[in-house]
Amino acid sequence: MTETVIRKRIEILADTPLVKRVTRAIELVEISGWTVLPVQSGSGRDGPWRDERVTGSDKSLILTVAALDKAARLSEELAPILSSHGLLLTMWDVEVVRGERF
Image 1: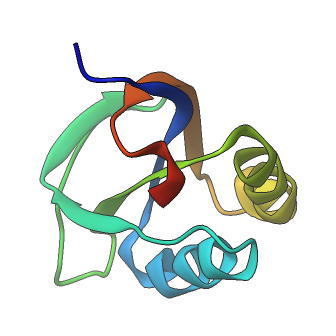
Image 2: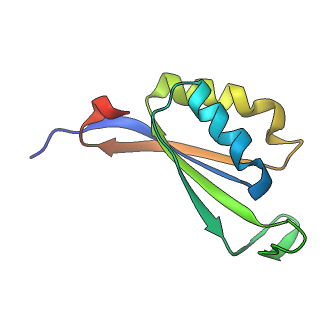
């Protein structure tokens, strides 16, 4: 079996205008890569919502995988805007092949 290592998968749900701010934070803590996906709709504490590009309330999901120390640094870097800008940050352990890349 191929050898795997444990890393953190991080998902950040943010208003699309904040994507650059989030990806800059990812790069600042030296995480090597990220992916941005558009989000069409969802539901949360305030009820359902849908993508609305006209008013600028569309959302994106930013995905990345990192070593534990870099994931912790990213969480600290984003902490000041998590509540004020309504970001949702989740992370959990994943097994990856070629762990040196993360």
